[in-house]
Amino acid sequence: MASLYPDIKANSHHSLAVSNLHTLYVEECGTQEGIPVLFLHGGPGAGIERYHRRFFDPEKYRMILFDQRGSGKSTPHACLEENTTQDLVSDIEKIREHLGIDQWIVFGGSWGSTLAMVYAQAHPESVRALVLRGIFMCRQKEINWFYQEGASRIYPDYWEDFVAPIPLEKRNNMVQAFYEILTGDNDIARMSAAKAWSVWEGRTASLSARAEVVEHFSHLHTALSVAMIECHYFVNDSFLEEDQILKNIDKIRDIPSFIVQGRYDMICPMESAYELHQAWPEAEFIVVKEAGHAASEPGIISALVSIMNKLAVEETV
Image (cartoon, rainbow, N blue to C red; front, top):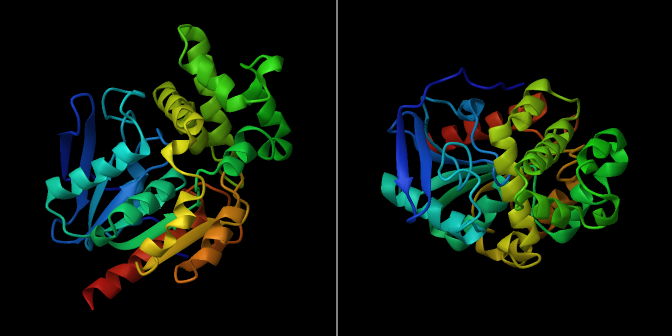
């Protein structure tokens, strides 16, 4: 079973102004002469983590990681203004051009898989391969499953904590109810709602709860950006047409691609990955039997690292 590469430091950091309001934190790791690979984090709003550098052989890859608008070290934090899917797609191209990269492998999980596919459909000429994990296509049925009814039946104890900030009469539309609190003026209520929203995600991410995942989502800085930005996207249909990704699959059909999906993913159930696979049989489909959603689960790690090792060999042949 493949495992993560040893911990490494970033070679360089960039503060890239992508608008008059937003400045992105961008870092590079690995070898400057290596195969360019872009890491897209989840959420939206979750930000990059140190272990995200470790999916790639540092002697073979030039890794580019960045915090999307409002996330992590990008500024302003948790900002909803000028924060849409189209803005993020534009940001990715600005990063590519700023770094002088012609083509790169795009690697993304959860919301990162959404953004990777939308970006690739907009700029297929810039993408040499796609590596996707925990497929999320931002359709209403996927939002309903996790935030209204579905996952609630699997985790009724965690769900009780999630809904606690919301009055009973408003629980028929949980996303909207959270959004109203998170964009309101009551700072104490905002913080409480943000933590409930984010911890729900952290607790359900792994097949067996992993303390480090829950801890990451519990941190108030992360919780605020995850909750506010996810709510902002979800009340706006993620700034996508329904089934936009599936309708435009022909635009990326010929890009070498891999889909890695945990069989017991409770955040992004396997149904979506399977629908994507049926529409896009050219992409290699890998089901990890004993895994949920988190990229940090051993089976998911093994699948992703193995793919990246395989691509490194193919690129140098």
